[in-house]
Amino acid sequence: MPHFFFRTILCALMVTGLWAQQTEVVLTATSSAKLVLAMTSPKVTGLDEATIAQEFTAVLKRDLDETGVIAMLQERLPADSAPAKAWKEVGAQWLLSIRLTKGANGDLQMEASALDTAAEKSVFTRTYNANKIVPLRYLAHYLADDLVGRLTGEKGVASSRIVFVRQTSPGVKEIFQVDRDGAGLIQLTRHGSLTLSPTVASDGRLAYVTYKGGAPEIWGQHRKDGPHERFYPTGGSGGMLSSPVWSPDGKRLAFVQGDRRGNSDIMTLDLASGRARRLTDGNGINTEPTWNPNGNQLAFTSDREGGPQVYLMQEDGSNLRRLTGEGLYNASPTWSPNGAMVAYVSRFEGKFDLFIYKLGEGKAYQITTGVSTSESPAWSPDERRLVFTSNRFGSSQLFTTDLSGRQIVRLTELSSCQSPRWIRGR
Image 1 (cartoon, rainbow, N blue to C red):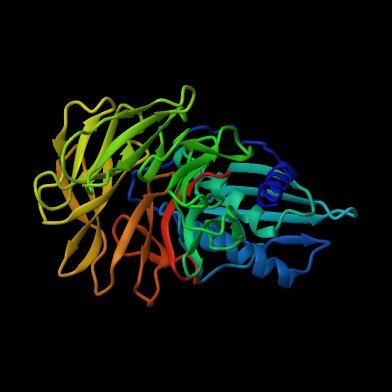
Image 2: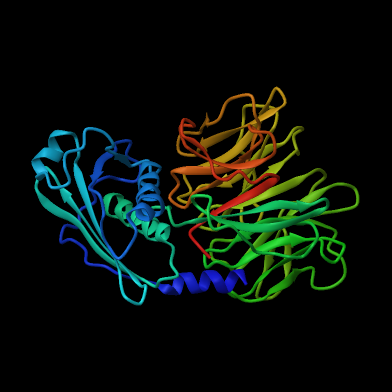
């Protein structure tokens, strides 16, 4: 079973750390500077060097290159045994050294250290012990995340995961999960029906909408790794239901409930009591809620003034105000992890592009441009990238982009994907 597999993997990765004495943060998470890092060839015992090159070294370099804060030095590299001064002269600020050892029982040990080439002193030292079932690329992900954490004060996202919907056959969509690098695909639901709108709580609990019983229902987990149960409605029909999203404290779900006239409103569901509360009340469509990190505000899409636009309101529905001012069609808002930005899509000439609204500036910035459509943005946990869907290669596939829009990466070649959500893990 998928839940058992990942629980086994996570339990098997037993990490112990020996941190360097220096505790200063070298870069802030919002800095545009990049630290230039070089690495010597890993020293290997009991492992095939070709396998290490493909399944560890290449993965680590790609992880670090995509962090946004580290630039990997790839050319004019000195010999591995060269002194720190030689590495500094070719531009390396940090020099990473790694030793990988496979024990007689198959378990792995990785020792990693980084040297400041200017000061010629250690800035990072850590030892990782892993069960033999842990893939080598997982060790690369964890090392990349720890290096970013040492550098910025915030753990990286190489070991994070993305949950999304994919069509498996005509009329059937299920929820899947994939690792940050596009590997490790697993299927999370098997309802054999339309299963849509996944949302993941901070503790890993899943919720979604499914038509497995005919009418749409909100299903999810009351505890991490627990069974999937019906959340709403508790009895009878709830009408048209869509877009559930966990509150930051994991105690409520915001969702959308529609009526027979085609109107829809934002609701909240208290998981402990099972009581639902309506936050919007008016003719028209109110949909796609997203919480701010404090859980006291929601952004959502509404056509109350004509075309779809993004609005904000308090958690009780008060203080409603419009956020987006430019464009005739703005939708699919998603609040950033630190609460300073809202990403959304805007339609122009029949196609959608990604935008970011910076709340402190009161200004929107366009992220993607081009001949294809970009939809369903969701933030990375470190707020440095967005995952989204695009038809730039035909069918709807998963992509990620940095906030400049210059570093767009296709996550997988899977087709018919929608509604991605980027999470730390499950």
